[in-house]
Image 1: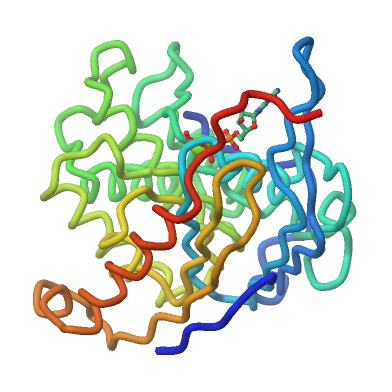
Image 2 (image 1 turned 180 degrees about the vertical axis):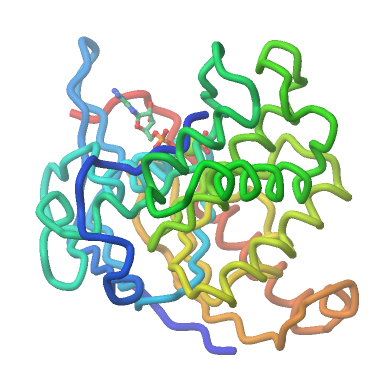
Length: 289
Ligand SMILES: Nc1ncnc2c1ncn2[C@@H]1O[C@H](COP(=O)(O)OP(=O)(O)OP(=O)(O)O)[C@@H](O)[C@H]1O
Ligand SMILES: [Mg+2]
């Protein structure tokens, strides 16, 4: 394990088009001097400032940071829906909006955002229709069912979102994300609303999927143990304007489990990250001028 210093729902394909799924693996992602500011009636809000992160193809990166530090904003830029105010985000050297990978970026949003007029399985199948057109209808049904069952929704496949609890809706959203199998999967606190056991099961499924298909995952969480159990690298961000405080490589062997949590290094790292977050809290001012 190294500490490396730094400056350093609808799940939908993040943008229409893109290369066919047979294209080579996940792209190398380079975030260079990225800043994002929003103009508001009250003044300028700088969400991100000079963020530098390199995410090699097939990595599992997790971002932790105080509420409002720009984590969701960063995922929006990675998905191509929000342009940088300064700096660049490139996939294999090409700006994200011009990259052939933009159609292969999946996004599990912080809130489920399901289509209310579609049942759970229809919500998952819609994404499969768009993202995996090579599947027959029978295969789409079977794949959607499989993920709904993995996420514990057996028996609820034909319910509408309003008939599901918040956590169940989020599980439909996660099913959609995992069934899609994009080259890059952006996950914004996907497990926050789930009970402990479901959360653990989905963490294992996510890691299994990641190990099998070697997609790149950029994951956001407020849970330090979750970050330590899942990630290859943890990016710790400061309060707004968010910048990278430290990047930490995590090399516990997998599978990581209860025993991993008891390891002295796990406990030490947990304390270290907590310390970093405490030292770099969220801003008390709403705007910057
Ligand atoms: N469209 C917008 N217009 C103006 N300000 C915005 C907009 N989107 C985000 N912000 C501001 O940018 C900052 C970062 O927001 P963001 O949603 O990225 O935070 P976050 O780190 O994801 O927080 P949380 O952990 O609470 O989800 C916040 O101060 C927020 O108020
Ligand atoms: Mg957020």
